Structure formats: structure tokens, C-alpha cells
Image (cartoon, rainbow, N blue to C red; front, side, top):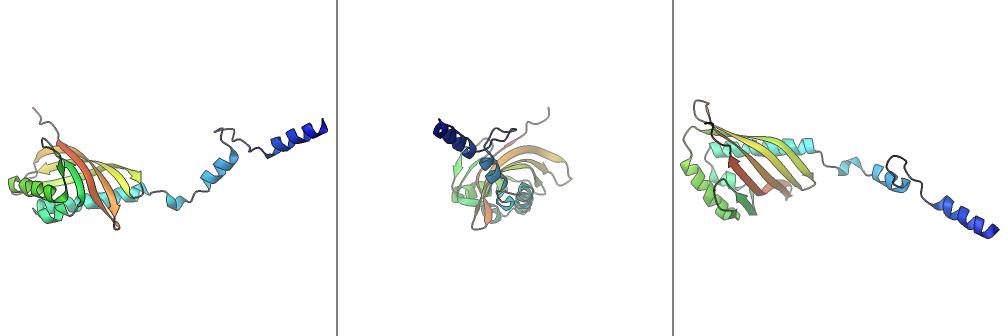
Length: 170
């Protein structure tokens, strides 16, 4: 009987304690709390970095620089533009960009506003909105987009994007 009591006491004393608020064992709580803060992604910094890319993208679009615009894409990127079939690969995306720029009205400008970014590490998804204005500053159209950015060789490149225009006001 004494052996059974000692065994039960030994097992009971060695079982992990449980956090009353989460129901998880203390070892799990302690190891989670000990995770280095540096390993977490600073999403405010990522958002600022993506906004800088979008600002440079707009400048390249306004300058009608197809090469600069294509440079934002990964070689294996896929884009899903408004009212068009899916376009795969940087070379095909470049042709689409050239077509877009050829139709662009002189003096029109575009701006991209990053609304949100989420993800972690080297892959983030961006949600944003687009505003295009004519030479007088009048809004020509607005739209929205999502882009998936992947960090390759130390810089973000767009690997997937989708965009569409907002409905025109009636």
C-alpha cells in the first residue's frame, strides 16, 4: 500500500502544472513566452517597405517605364488583371505592361495606397487601392488590388497580383 501511495505521489508531483487561464501546461506557456521577439515580423515596417515599392511602381507607371514596372515582378509571377485572362511569367507580363502604357492617356497619374499587409517572414499579402487622375487632378477611376510579395535575394518581388476597377458612378 505504501508503494502504491508513493508511486501515485511521484507521478502526481512530476506532472506538468496547468495554466488556469489557458488550460495549457506551464512548460508550453513558458516556451512560448520565451520565443525571441526578434523572430516576429514587424508588420508596420513591412507595410512601409511595401508602400515604398508601390510609390516607386506609381512613379514608373507615370514615367511609362515598362522595364522598371516589369522589374517589380518575379520571373514566375502570375497576374490577374481586370477583364483579362491570367498572365503567367515576367516576359508575358512585360508585354501586357507595354500594351497598358501604350493606351495610357498622357498626363494621367496613378497612386497606390497600401491598406493592409499580413503574413510573416519572406511572404506577405498586400491589400490596397488605386486612384488614377487626369492632368488637371480630376479622379479618372479608382480600383483595388491584392498582391503577394516574396522576399528573394533580400528584396520583395511580386509573385501574384489581382486588380480591378471600381464601378463608375452613374
